[in-house]
Image 1 (cartoon, rainbow, N blue to C red):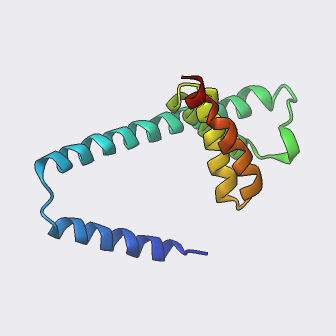
Image 2 (cartoon, helix red, strand yellow):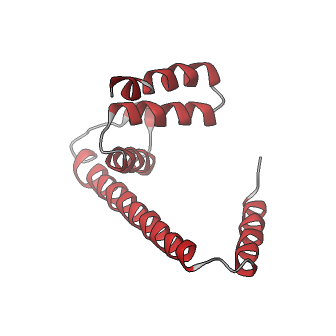
Length: 128
């Protein structure tokens, strides 16, 4: 398992390498635009997750609504925020949703099920 300090060290090494490589204006502009996209996506996640957390605590809890599998309101809000943000990012495209689900399974080392979803995700390309 990678520790937080190892990740930080890698990021610092990458930053130092970029500082010394003299990237061109085009790459610098692409980097700025990409970072703006990242920041926008992060803001959308925060808005969605915090809104869901408030709803969980101010509406669901007083009304006796229970979360699945003993989830905490915060854990549920984080998962909801991630899903809502990702769905918006892919514009609710079913094939992209399958691909993302496959990527998640790959990350969890469920390669067999991931392969099935990757195959289903190919359907979009075959329809065109």
